[in-house]
Length: 162
Image 1 (cartoon, rainbow, N blue to C red):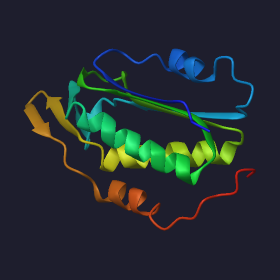
Image 2 (tube, rainbow, N blue to C red; image 1 turned 90 degrees about the vertical axis):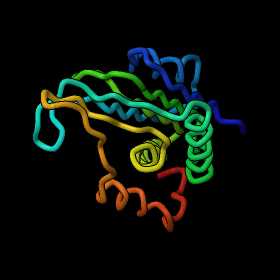
Image 3 (cartoon, helix red, strand yellow; image 1 turned 120 degrees about the vertical axis):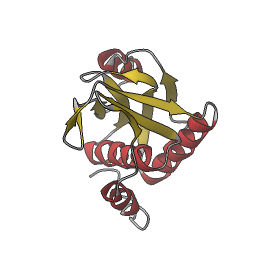
Image 4 (cartoon, helix red, strand yellow; image 1 turned 135 degrees about the vertical axis):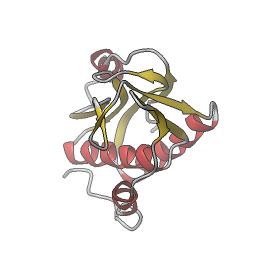
């Protein structure tokens, strides 16, 4: 079965409700939907920020995300996936990323969403700069994010009915 997959990178605001509805509309085979929404905080490393500025490598980012969605589909019995990621200037309180996974059962939807977010946080070709009153600076990768992503390497597939 071909799993409906949608990957979009946009400067526009993300409508979480509309994106989730688009994935599930008319579907009676879906028993679980997990939507992870990443929101811009007003601080970075304990300092107030004005905004995050995200950039990406057009074309490559979508291709890499699709590759990891396909890996998630191989690991879990998914019935649909939607990834929407913002680029550009994002102010505190605005949605940065949305990852929606659908499956017949909850465990697959939860684990696939977590897997995809661990990938997006550590491997997707996005660059993040923070704007503060004192100026701008690039945000470095964090070891704890790499550790979270590494735990999936040797993890076996789960039973679809869990």
